[in-house]
Amino acid sequence: AGLRGYDALLVSIANDAKVNEGAGLPPSRGGSLVAQGVYTRIRRRLDARDARSKPSTAQYNTCLAALALVSPEDIASDLCMKHMRSLLDNMRRRGVSANASTLNAALAVCSRHRVGHEALEVIDTMQQRGVAPNAVSYTRAAAAFRPRPRAELRSNFASYADGSEYGALPYGADPDDHASIDRSRSVAVERLKGLATSIMMRASNGPAGKSGDGLRAAMADTIAVVVEVLIENEAFEEAGTVAKRMLHQKGPPPHPSLVRVGMVAAALDPARSPVESVGEFVRGVEAVAESAKDGLLSDAAMCKAFNSMLETLLDAERPEVAIALVDHHVLRPNPSAGTGTTDADSDSDSDASSPSNARPVDVEVVPNAHSYNLAIRAYADFGDCYEALSVLETMRTRDVAPNKDTHEVTMSVIRQRDEEELEVQSSGAVGFGYEK
Image (cartoon, rainbow, N blue to C red; front, side, top):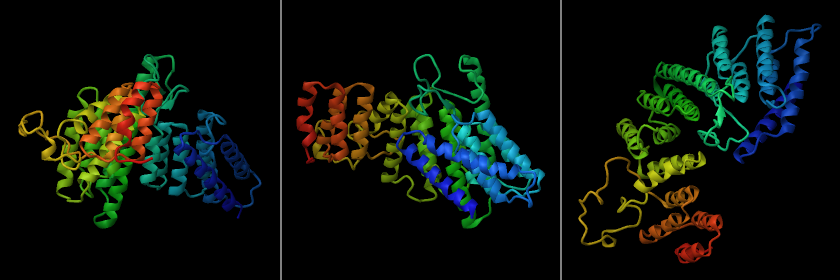
């Protein structure tokens, strides 16, 4: 009964932390202190020499779950890893069996403190004890390799906080030594690639039928997390390679989250232009999804993936990359059907087959109002407010109905510069087709 009460309390703390994370806020310090108190109390009971009976697996699992909710501000990462290892060792010495919940709770500790090498060691140790990792295990192990944000870090995907210093640091890197940071990052990337290989092998060796398809779908979602963490570690080429490898695995159609992060990795690859790189990636997705005929790359689905990619790039403070894609796929002349343009709207003297009007055979994106809203935001984030407001005129000429978000993002552009001529220029465009 006591354990159930502790478990309910820890679930409440974890839910509060998720709410704060969704709002862009750090986890509650009070929740961390309560979790630390729960951990301390259960740990004392487990370590008591006069224990009359062997502890249960549930006690250790709850103790690990509490430790995973303690902030690094309250227990230093190295000390927290020591607590976790001693708990697992104590569990083994006393003959208490471990299960998947034990493994995942221990990996949650590693993920909270972003200690990737410990996560891989936990997986190896548990496999020796007969506990196989599942999709949750692999997801938490991958998340443990996320770089540690500095105080000035503004986004997980940001390369640098300013022009000279790294915005996030891999575990064990010396903040004042760029060579140390690069070495630690290289080690993290290689371990992530190895983790991705293990996940793909697990997916490919799964059973046939619906149960196997479910496993492969879960593993595809896990690979999406691996790709995301590779992006955070600035390994854009490796991230794209891992995404492509998973897309060609036999099984269910590609998972939308995997398509999104694969597109982001392609867009951020510095070796190629965003338009070319994203186009190549999506053509690969099309080749995989075509035989499945699942609608993954229908107009609506492709637009949703494209918009999600733009949102990620803007949240990552990479408006210049978003603008390159927006210019090509949203604002270029004569986009595909669905934007509201008709043959009557085009210039009768223009040649429909001319290079300027021909549709390039790269990514089939039919933009919607949200796409245009993101275009406005991209130019605003880049500091080009006039170009941002010109998107409104493009929407008008193409009969794309604005919505509440259009109004809000436009008002934010005006407030950003607070210039009277911007307000005059946009006053007519804001109201068309939309009443506040």
